[in-house]
Length: 448
Image 1 (tube, one colour):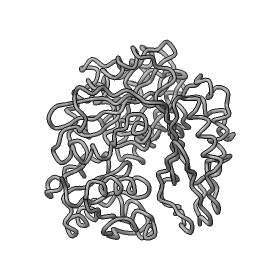
Image 2 (cartoon, rainbow, N blue to C red):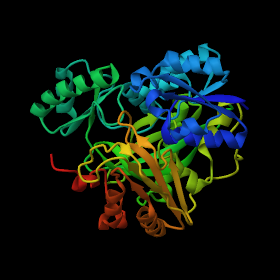
Image 3 (cartoon, helix red, strand yellow):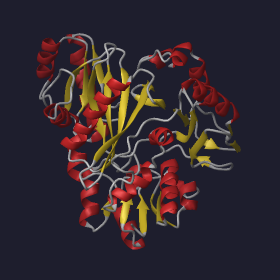
């Protein structure tokens, strides 16, 4: 096992990685921007290195600075967390060339699955169902119009290098597609430095279901069940739960087999997530594979008892998956994760600032992953996620009740947060019944 690793991230995921390393006796190095000197991960790590100004491009995305910090502190490996450099194939290659272990999949797997058009082709060859659409990248708006005419509207344009809902545009007819193409192209160029687009048939009101994958260097690939991620706004998740209320054992097994096939097709090693769209007729199609640990990984940890960060570290060190092959992972009870953001719950605008008082909920079945504390100033430069509240109950009904209690006991003063929005979601009859889709949050979005 490693003796020291560098964490190329910030906030709650950096704190989570530190916790996993502490249990394994691994020393940690935190990198931070000038704006994050007082962030909790910096205080908890064994060592810390400032790598640049507040702007992500000058700090957390500065490959040279991150690699230099690893080298001067004697770190053997780098854990990228999620976001920033986590799915940057070039970063993974440079780390390897510098003699560092990248705690994640190979650069080749990242590159394949990071190019959404190429990923579509690869998983289709592996026998995983995909939506009708372009076989590869689009070469012009005329190409897009021809394909849309063949498969029928509505269609959706997506950035090949995309993620987080950026570079995506929906079109219901030819006129909308012409306009959408230019907007998606420009957004993809600005967000990812790659304007390449692909096109798919748009599924109306689907469920968003993802499967957690673990794969080791010994060739074993397993899935740890699904997470329901349909409660989202503008393609960004707000609340996740496991297991999904819509899946039965037969469909779960079928989707799980497809997820494993996708991972094998990518020659994947480490933790990853295969995401699917589930239509109203219960047919599923591949959407994308995230080649990193997910924000919502604790949901799976709570229902399986598997420490995913620990598994990541073991696999990166060349060890096999820790649980025996004969053990079949089945969900135990029900878990829900609430993403607590520093934002106005009505307008959804960011709400950075000083936290004047913080009281975390506790009690049976409650977990909080966070990097904030009383007196901490939430900076305006990064993602607004400040905490993840997780609850676990014997079934979905108990998890909802426990979630409401924990949210009501969660006190964050000095800034606005999304806690009131989560309480409204829990009280929604459609959410309580499990009858919802990815369009659920439209009723709570502010008017444009």
